[in-house]
Image 1 (cartoon, rainbow, N blue to C red):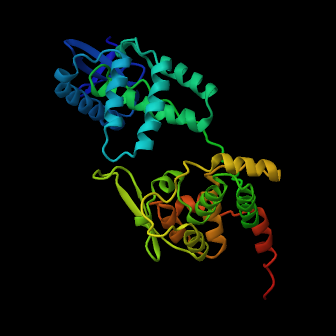
Image 2: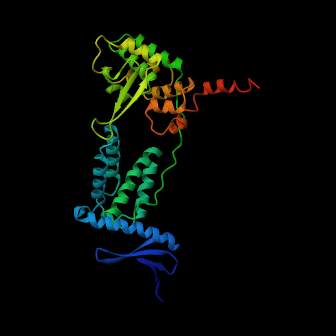
Image 3: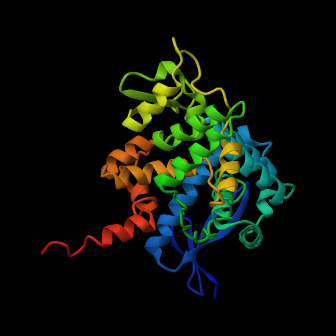
Length: 349
């Protein structure tokens, strides 16, 4: 009695119950487990695999040189880094991820020989070596490599398909109070060094504009009108180019009026970053270290505590999710504000 029974087109069932895809690849008949005994599910999986094989047949003449995992990684790298909508900082992020993958994946091994077990061992090493978010970023691109291996006809199954992301533990944000931010700004200006005044202005601007540091660096006086600031991101002329507007609040107007030179044109800030000045002020004041990006967190929380609605704050920050990230990240507020708010409960009946 045969161990195999035909149960559908390109489908055979082993006597143990598992259904396999049976297809001819490169002149050889191969069987690939579909990991199910349910015929309906098997047909769906079969169709996905066969679609990949057909796509590979079209791509194969152009991909004849692609054999090793390193070759496939190069194909994936080309696809990722040439996307026109990506911002320069995102491209740098991906290049860093690709560099780690090139150093940790078995790039010299033929992609046909890279099994799910070996992919799992690689993932275990990455999960131990890197924190959860970093490891998940590596896995995301590694999974692109796995899918490309199938797409290019080097394997019928994706070795990375069963790899699961690590759970990311949320970190408590250290959000400074308005008093702390103002104290830091005053301390920076009080140093009276060559760049102390501009560094203080820079910190104050970031705190009340809520923009990313890169957007502040790129800001021109021509981008600032009477009531609005226009922040640009991405590469001009590409799909990734984006512009958002921020209304000028009273604190922001005060700092801009103080900074604005006569006949102002060109870059708003000549100082590359206030990072050192900020760190030194925190050390002198003996307060927890503040990063430049923490000023963006301050802005979001300050705006929410002032009563600005979540969708508006989200729009000001440049988010495009309608406020989901703001709710997740900032809406808890600072502990002192939460306690003050809780004290209001029950004051009216």
